[in-house]
Amino acid sequence: MRHIGLDLGDARIGIATCGESEMFASPAETYRCRGREADLKYIADYCAAAGAKRIVIGLPVNMDGTNGPRAEKVMAFGDALAELTDAEIVYQDERLTTVTGEQMLIEAGVRREKRKQVIDKIAAAIILQTYLDTEHGKTKKSR
Image 1: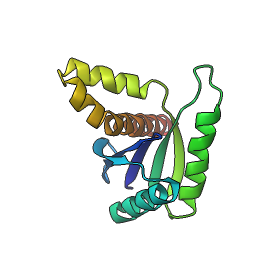
Image 2 (image 1 turned 120 degrees about the vertical axis):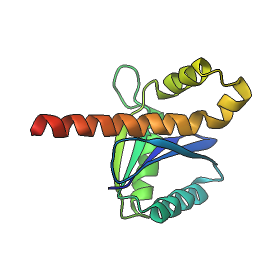
Image 3 (image 1 turned 135 degrees about the horizontal axis):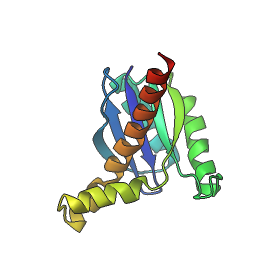
Image 4 (image 1 turned 60 degrees about the vertical axis):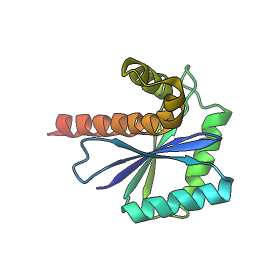
């Protein structure tokens, strides 16, 4: 099954993909937001072109585990996206994914200017990989 991972932000949306093997998430692109309707259309078209069966959206849960205004905004986007695509929409806790991605890029020696250009798609890949790892863990336990 083809999966797409999204890291939703106000200015940019990070996009990641994984193939049929469902083993590894790869950063795909960083989309610059142009307004809610244009953003929804772009993401729905991207997912359709990729043959996505599942869209994993990072959910910015508060550190205490509750959903705040940002999480509600992300879920509203997910609900609207669900109306434009046949793909299943699922949410993945994204706490600290941007921090983790930033640390990975720093350790790899990526300069600050370049980090700003790629952090969103890296965060999307971390979100998607976390989801994939969780799902594979469930599959192994059920065998």
